[in-house]
Image 1 (cartoon, rainbow, N blue to C red):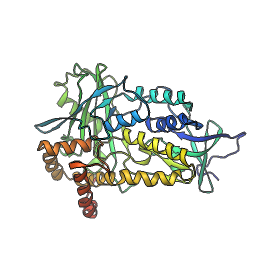
Image 2: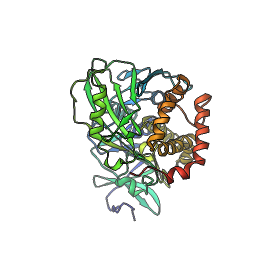
Image 3: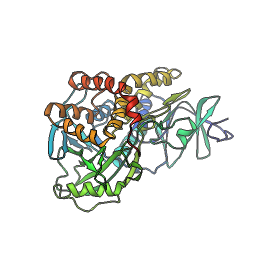
Image 4: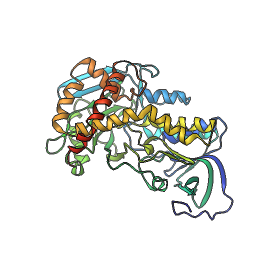
Length: 417
């Protein structure tokens, strides 16, 4: 019987090679890559064509490389050359380092445009895309065998969960956020600014809640190059008082700090919030894989996951094309080798900075010198993983060892929400 509770009593099941639940960058990456190689791919997206996705809209150099690997140009995006980090009165403006294999530039591309562009490329590659279609995985004998959507039954050799934060489709496959790990919340809107064409992202690392308590997170302004900037704030669940944190108030507080310097106009839309899953209990099983946000592939230290979504989507497609039967198991192993150490370190670091006094001290170190700020930039730009050479890679591997030893006391002394 299907775990989802859906029946399979529909006529003429439709056979496909790959069925993708979710039409964001991760799902699009699977569809583009697999359909371009001749696979039959169907994507189910619950939103309408051209739907918006709440996001900071920033593309790291890692994301730029992933888009290039997909054959996607940046003609419609606004190029960025680096990041301006602000901590109290310290300001560090750094260029993207151009660490091989990543370029020395990023971009800002509003998601309503980026996601639609990627889905259109998927369609051009031969993928079938259904908008305003929710899809539920069908599981028989412990194996994902298809999806049900709109009263129709589709069977596929690989089911790809690319639906972001946990929902019904995740539950059907036994996928959930690990309750023992941190997660994030963020909120953003848009405003007009004469500085909209600047080439540096801006991140303020010193936020405080309504009671003056330091918030583990940051505020951002990402210039979109179209007359507007994306302005928002994000916070981690490891802080004391997180459950009572008012994101709208935090957004207003940050806006008051930067409104004059950026000459911000009124909000162009009501600020909208979203959840950032930073862990998962499962990311694969017989006949299926979870990719991107659905697999918890979000950097806990910046809330960024578009690049990991694109990479994991391409990997899932490539492994399927090589051997459909072994693809899920190999996918889990390779993702683990590439990203687990870095993401695990980020989650442990999140517990550390949940303590206000550690957060204050850590921020002074993070931007205190140009050399340390350069390592912070690599972390904030998702430019570090298991294979990263140089000071950034060495620092993260050392942090992984130290925080592993401190993991139990960190969790035992975590700030109360």
